[in-house]
Image 1: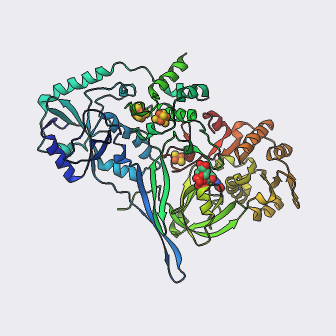
Image 2: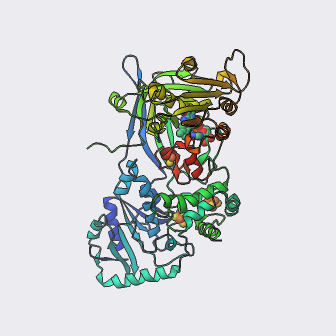
Image 3: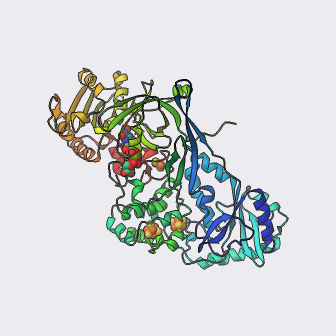
Amino acid sequence: MAAVKYISREKLPEWLKALAAERRLLVPVEEGGAVVFRAYDPAKAPVFGSDATAPPKGSVFPASKELFSYTYGKEGEDAKPTLTLDPKTTAEPTVVFGSKPCGARGFLIFDRVYMGKKFPDPYYIAAREATVFVTMACDTVENTCFCHWVGSGPADPAGSDLLLTPVAGGWLVEAVSAKGEPLLASPALTDGAAKAAEAEEVKAKTRAALGEAPDISTSKEALLARFDDMDFWRDQSDKCISCGACTYLCPTCYCFSITDEGSGMSGKRLRSWDACMHFQFTLEASGHNPRPTKAHRLKNRVGHKFSYYPTLHDGLIACCGCGRCVKSCPVSVDIREIVQNAVAKAKA
Amino acid sequence: MSEPFNPYLPEVATILETVQETHNIMTFRVRFDDEAKMAAFKFGPGQVGQLSAAGIGEATFVINSPPTRMDYLQFSVMRTGEVTAKLHNLVAGDKVGVRAPLGKPFPVEDLKGKDIVFVGGGIGMAPLRTLFLYMLDNRADFGKIRLLYGARSPLDMAFSAELPEWTSRTDIETTLTIDREADGWEHKVGLIPNVLLEMAPKAENCVAITCGPPIMIKFTLEALKKLEFPDEQILTTLEKRMKCGIGICGRCNIGSSYVCVDGPVYTYAQLKALPNEL
Ligand SMILES: Cc1cc2nc3c(=O)[nH]c(=O)nc-3n(C[C@H](O)[C@H](O)[C@H](O)COP(=O)(O)OP(=O)(O)OC[C@H]3O[C@@H](n4cnc5c(N)ncnc54)[C@H](O)[C@@H]3O)c2cc1C
Ligand code: SF4
Ligand code: SF4
Ligand code: FES
């Protein structure tokens, strides 16, 4: 167990600058009224107080990523066509600094899918291995937070490498993975043993502020029991405008599309975030769509996170309770209510 | 150090030959450029591939040639949208990309010793063709083999070059049908499920394998139930929209079953156990 360290507010820029010198450093900053993760700029103060509007999902899983480039050519006397494919699976060493635990935990959900045994995803694995998460435990909670419903919490280290806990004057710094330890070597950090007790208090106080979690342990079966109850789903999705904001802002939504982009003899194949809340997502060639209405699609989004995924992955819920989809939905669709309604119906 | 396996990177292949099967179905016969990879390539009947032309995009097609005939891999592509329309412009000598094999094959071992009735409609004949030819190439391993293949009209019948052989072989029983009378048509006229009821295959020790448009599947299943086929003795292959083909992109699920890795071949019993979202 590495020693606990302390970083003061005053020394933080020094640490950030040192980190940024060696690799890509992403921090939450304000941009156009939202807080998003961007490359560190010493002239721009990071926003560490509240949770970022968008999670650091793009650090490991960019909104659009080149799978390979291609070039057509001709060779030989008879000008035979050739095709060369050039994949780039390497990833830039990165530190994501200042995400809340829920933002980092999202990658746990990704890991099970992208680091599976049968088809491990080389792009994801390279980026995941090259990225270190320096996460900040929460000292305040919002009314949209429900990490404690899904087996997480405001100081959850799962998915992170260093955990920072706010204390008077700065942060306690703990390594929570072997990958995080080398970052503790910075001279900007001092011994943190004296602050450890205070940090524990902050953690306990924040957890207490979230209150009791309702019992949603039957969500797997409860949602399946509602599968054919389209009246229920029409009701739950009544307000939804199928904008997809909930999926794009979700730290655990991992679906993508594959498309080609090119002109003339060369171009690239891309993979880009996609959203199951859109009609086109499952539209088939015949015109048939197994999820023709927003009710079918919301059913899939909630069902995937609280039923199908946990069925496949040892009960792990594919939602980290960050509340982003609740906060950012233009019409206030609330995933917590939907899950609770399904659970309540199954009990009734 | 060698690169880790990249499931998104297609094998570059060359089109050896194209066959215009119908006005909207074109067959492509391709071989990997890397001969060592072609020689090592293994798949089971029913497995699919992502066929692409760089710049055009990828789409999913069953490898409809059997693993017993490895001179080339055959894909038959119905023109339905952007990617398929552009694939139709390709000619022999052009390069394509192939990601294969994907998905699970038909349970060939379980089928040995059984009577088989194939029921294919339209392009749905493609996934049946690979298994059908595999069985012909291993004829002694299977019992009675019957094929019912239907299309809208004679002109909509793919694989027409092979039909004379299929209908004249005496070790199998082939029935062809079209929806409406047409000049010069010497085979059956009638909808597939009705013709199937007329054929009345016995369910005992028999497995029915069906693929086709959703409406045909629906009525074929009803017919098979009338003929008292148990759910476990009905196999079908599903078509869901796919992208990655490797269980990651999240597009093809029915509840917690991913058609691209857990399917596309399912027994009717398995399908009934899944949430109802076909
Ligand atoms: C397991 C499997 C095996 C298949 N085998 C064959 C085959 O042997 N021969 C054949 O002709 N077709 C087959 N298909 C269907 C084929 O994949 C689609 O027709 C094709 O992807 C349409 O692509 P497109 O780009 O031309 O259409 P697009 O321009 O993308 O769109 C046209 C329509 O096709 C839909 N679509 C896109 N991809 C698929 C897809 N994979 N499945 C269903 N709809 C899709 C779109 O939603 C859209 O509505 C198979 C599909 C699956 C899933
Ligand atoms: S953010 Fe709200 S309105 Fe938009 S797709 Fe999600 S649930 Fe529907
Ligand atoms: S579903 Fe909503 S609350 Fe759960 S992780 Fe995604 S955005 Fe956060
Ligand atoms: S096609 Fe991507 S998960 Fe099945």
